[in-house]
Image 1 (cartoon, one colour):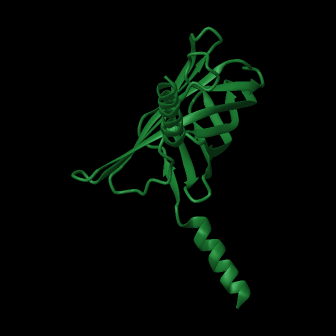
Image 2 (cartoon, rainbow, N blue to C red):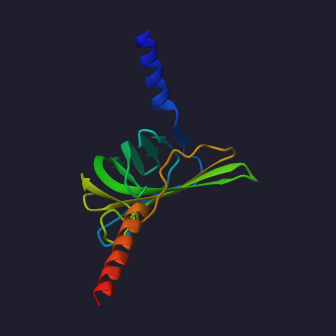
Length: 189
């Protein structure tokens, strides 16, 4: 009986909010050099993103004529963006390690019964170029930028975190402490 209960709990907690999204709309993957100049760009033709909102982690795989992204690990940040770490095979080279940030915006249009996920790379290293930095392999120092939109003709639960450039709790604490400091200064005078 204990084994059956443990198996039920593992199945229930591990799969209740997991969602697998198959890429099917427009997704573009671009490679930029150190100066921000476009080196290679192509439209992804297949892939998937699997994310579990309970565990706040997931995985993904994507491919196009020029790129194959594999062994991608997703994990949630405090501000709702996702850490993206994995490998990309580019134009005959293999296992170029990359690391970056994604933001996933979610919207549901009740009138059309359509769910849309808008996925975009963020500026990971502060160089002004959106995308994941390639840290090992033949393309070290180059940036891999991803943008895509996936829509579904039915309601799909949103398992992804909500992205906010400034974490709301941190912003509230910062604003509140500033107000208290101003009140303390005004009171001393």
